[in-house]
Length: 81
Image (cartoon, rainbow, N blue to C red; front, side, top):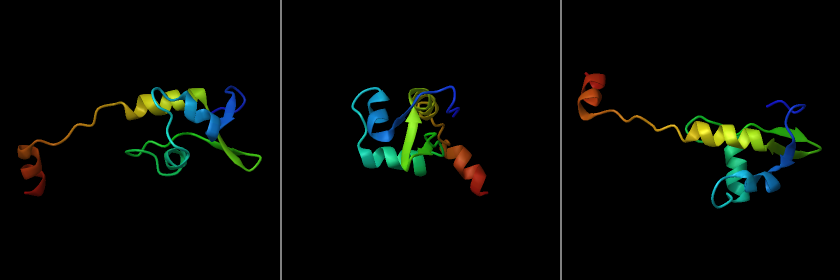
């Protein structure tokens, strides 16, 4: 995330950048620490508070919306052989 090119907002405000119902504060914290399926929401620590940008939220939503391909039964059997 380029802080100089993107306007940053505290997580409490940035939660409203998500489509649909805004995630809870604890969920936002999880997005920036653990993420989802290996995708972490980009953030910066500014004046003791965690911040992110509208663009970072859009990139995060795009990355987590990619469908996960599950193995078929045959592929699972081959992997364990």
